[in-house]
Length: 496
Length: 117
Image (cartoon, one colour):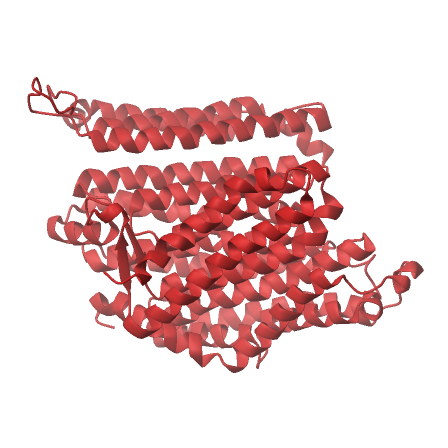
């Protein structure tokens, strides 16, 4: 075996080691621990880059942990969907860099190492979730990232932070249990936990009712994680209260766990060909459409900037779920690429909003009026993010939404293409409100004009992300054509 | 129907436990009780998965001169060991959150907390 599949272990283990050692390394030295965390993510990113180049050249590959071959051993698998490890590493690096000043400012010194430890654990969970090929492993990584996520929400110490975290924890734990229960059911039917193996055996045995039960449990569990309407109620508080770098990770990546989980489940059940998934697809499309409109509708009435962004996440996950449910190649490509692009855009928005809150201490639109003159670069970055998320060309948001709309027409459901455009109009309204408040309205607090631009460690991540939002819009063909073989492979059993 | 339930009594029992737990999570007002409901749900899922591996008259699957098949399936038990670790950490985190909520708001009743927001 060549040496490079070992990188697949490195991407999971490097951040884990970093997380465990962070409290030891950083005892009383908050600056050192930030660098330590960055170094751990640096190693991970290098490994991830190597893997992505490999998968683009040679296609998917897998690694047998401890030399035990699947289905007995635990398999790590890297395919085109696994390339989301790249975006996880990128956002992880930038959020950690952003935290350098932010954590120091908002947290007591003795807590800072634990904050970095939780961040790295969360990223470990995310990466592991994406690369594992084993169902139970999937559950374990999901729990790692969920538990660290609950704790990270409570970290900010704001008045209702613990309540938000508790609400998130209860809903998250129930959904995790549903997933575990369904994994148990799948194991009882197939006697295997390896995903590819489960798919093959399900196909052979065609046990319809247990498979249906498992599918229902998995879908419901992952829908809660993805915060699809009507199980979205935990999201706005949790994402708005968390510290801004954490919000960027939670909103950009952690909710995508639900989406990527659905993708995994779909890969199993499409390959097994025992069940007709049309009903579930219709449900997903409808819930996606409702989420788009509801998320946008509630966002319009928010005053708090981060609350607005949190509701906008619900809309955008709605777009992704809709693309997934359309089950046409354009829709699916659009949905998977939107997983990447929305992560970029939402991180831009949350981090630039976080920089504003850091400098001014205000967080409502009313109080933040006129901030555009005081912090020009941050506000421009936020505006680029806003334009992207509405989906105005030539930004990153446009291409995926265009593809999802094309997918709706391809699947002969033009109504949803129209619903999508309608939702985008709603979203346009509240982002315009935001940009308007920052640039064109007289300042509520005169001292806001005295505020200086964000520090360099915050400005750099924000600028990089905003630039990427534009670049991904212009070079959008690259991720689209990168993901295409995976989507074709997944939809092959449908004959499309 | 009754026959099928009787034959799969272990599965039926864990489903009932799961639903009792879910009821407590949704309907109880006290945060600690809500969380106990969650613990009941966890136990139900664990019991279900362990029951999957049971073999009639099966022995513990330990190699040695006295080992006689049939053996019970050890894999579900190993899985649930991991599951219990996860459940313990969830419990610890939730209880510490409840303590901090009590410190800040002076109550852990969900309706009173909602009024405070």
